[in-house]
Length: 405
Image (cartoon, rainbow, N blue to C red; front, side, top):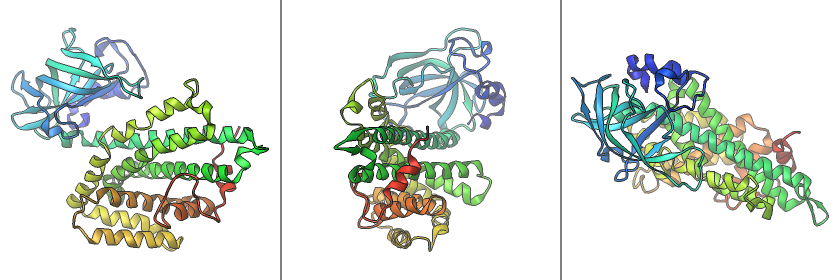
């Protein structure tokens, strides 16, 4: 986002990208490395940032790169210990983007005043705060009145970060469950050798691998946005993946906790934290509804994203009959545009499963890919964990996913 304002980027980017962490609350000139937060959300708007009421008043002539004073109330500022913040505020030309440091150039504190820290159910080490801007000095980033567009690339990256974080949470929960079940015996046998527990563990492993695989596919697309196909995938699939993976994580954490049993509920294990952290990413950077509406918006604004999506899943054509049928049915969903907003979650669910299955067919062993398609795409889709159909090689899936010493 800062690169839209080269003069600001020249000052800040070397310290933002420096591999130095300096937690001191001192002016940026005294630090070798800095951190950047965000202040977008207001209580009356939430995800609807156009409803923001924070105002920006030019100190001088105004315009891109110029100084403003910001007045308003931000309901979620993440994270208040950062050295500067990207802030959305209204000027006479509309919602604009600003860089607001904690310190003024004259060495005085900027009036970005923390009213309270949020008492969140999870994500406690990453503080969020409610903050008043009382004439806080900030510099406009990019074109005036184009604040959302100017900040949207950063939002895309943080949505991807939500996918990666949730996938990592799944992997950690799965690893704990697999390790426990490899060593715990009950009713005369190791847990991971008992058929019903194998069904549960293999199912959890499928969910984790599918999440990781989709996240890494989006990562590759982000690295190659100069390619038209990859750029179109980023525009569509980032929202699809963020919605689906983050939604699947809380249930996955709970089921893995149940594999541990009563000890998993104890606060001296890692599972309470994993469980409390699990819902955060589903809300962060836009809730599930916002992601689904962004999918529809991308389809309407850039119809080529739909072609790119089906071209991507089409790479797996012919390798799995269940997947082929799923993709054909999904295309029919797009042929009927009536009440599409009402059906948005159902459509995006099907898109997420289609691309996860297609990627696993191409890149995972047949035991994983076939089990995923059989359990997620056949017979009306997935139910509770541990309901994999007959014929799945659960032992092979467990062996692949179990952490090595």
